[in-house]
Image (cartoon, rainbow, N blue to C red; front, top):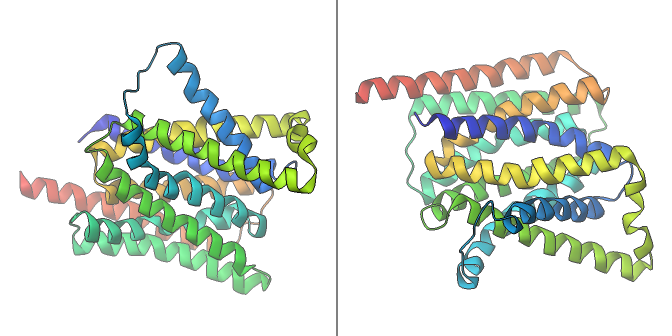
Length: 303
């Protein structure tokens, strides 16, 4: 077992789990487009500092960077755009719950595009975990009668983008290093989201208000977390883990991120906790444990 890769995936899950909480806080001071622009400006600066200080070296060519750009379309462009706009219409816990279906999408995509194999029992436990997702989301929608399907649809598209990214990144790590993929995708996010935000503010004549949210300490803290940790750091962590471990295995850590998201939403955002959260969470945990046991059994049989 590659311990460093699994440690990277574990840290990735915790950072992503709390990201929904900080996005919600940031949305109280800025628009979704501005948040994306600011978080990737911070991410780009965080990536630039170690490069300028000579702590890391990137030798990727312009031709190579262009080959990585399709990866940047999945992450960060579509992933974060769908996520942030989705959070405008849904709660952070619900968003995390929907994105817990990412492992199933990744497993299917990886099997088709990468020929990664999975056992029937592994698939069963992964589906069980995703059923926990469906349980919570459907019961919450039925219970309140006010769930906005726009938010659910956007978060679902974000989940599909994440699955597509994992599969494509897994393939690209055979050609490019984890750092090279991280720097290209971070740079692409910086250019794209700042371009969109700049055009939007210039057309509305509100360019001076672009930096206004930085007068809010809560926003500054949120965008620092989202930029340094949830954008730049998680990009490197996921790319590193995907260079060592199959995409379907790494995607299971999104379930842990879901549980962290639910906890953060309930404790710090005051979001309601219902019985179906417990039922769904139990199914998610059972699925994670079951999938892990299956993998261990498979390794024992092979040895």
